Image (cartoon, rainbow, N blue to C red; front, side, top):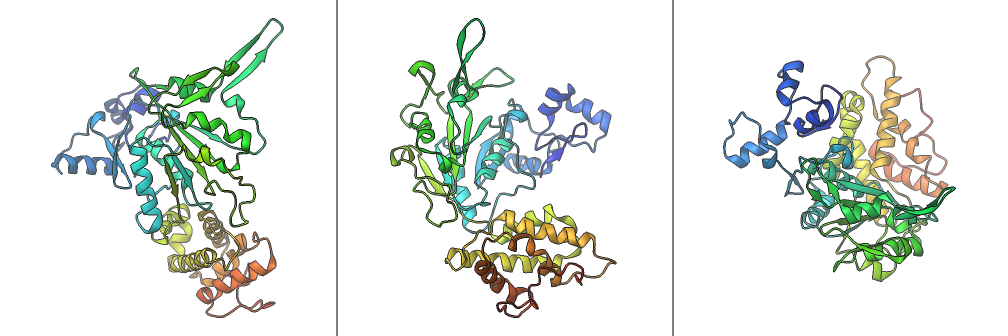
Length: 405
């Protein structure tokens, strides 16, 4: 687990360089002011360090050069002389999946990241495609640039712009071109390559996708500048694209803004990997952390949430349901249940009617009546033990706001 800076609340595994950079104080000065309880190194990091050094009783914190983290079982060094603000932020309550298909997906992604391969990660919404890259950047202190593709938007300003004033015109190089060409200068003066995350890459149209052709070349990456000039991409620069589809366009009808990507561009990604939805064994811990009131007052309902979640996703995978049920959908459901729980009078034990009422937080977002009814039919046996018939309001009653118990 990360620890929080007592000065500003910044969270990280190791705070010494943050304290020096942002607050001008050493670890000793920090603890002298805020007490010995003000930790500088997280317990998780210390435990791993002691185990690696074969001395479980060692009290002194490791030097920065000794720090290592693991992602999917793969060890990564921490770039301690990289500013946290120059990395992608770690998602709140992020947890590396340890169960199911997604845990294996992340193991393969971790190997690719460790070896510096370019990655194309695709999968359903809410499967953690961007999240794992954010966590990797934040926890290993890998400097990163993130750009998001939006259909119809000119991407050339990422690379360069033609500016003018009353006197003259000039070419200004964009942040992405400079990052690809010049890399990142660390606090110690080293130059290291960036990680470039391109989110929603399958939303790119034909002209937008062409920008990636030269950059992702596995022989020698180049980037196009003004007047047709090309620059070499700094060796080691890592390109990661995330998408909902595998580059061939929408297959399900649920990702209609996805475009087919030229196969000669897709071929430049060294590791195309599919991500799957998270196993409930992992997801329930994240849900509990995000919604502590629900986890505290209704722990007996958490298993029902998990059973329903897995049942809905199974029917989606079998094409029996035409919808998505991502981690965001689960958060909408449990989050609304927690909101309703705050207005429940007394300290009565919440029943499954709470889940029934809260279900409208995602059911109302299903676009057609037939699918909504089909989803209720999947849910109802796990919540009420009954079956839903068309027009039946006695089972999953999404308007039951005040009869929560």
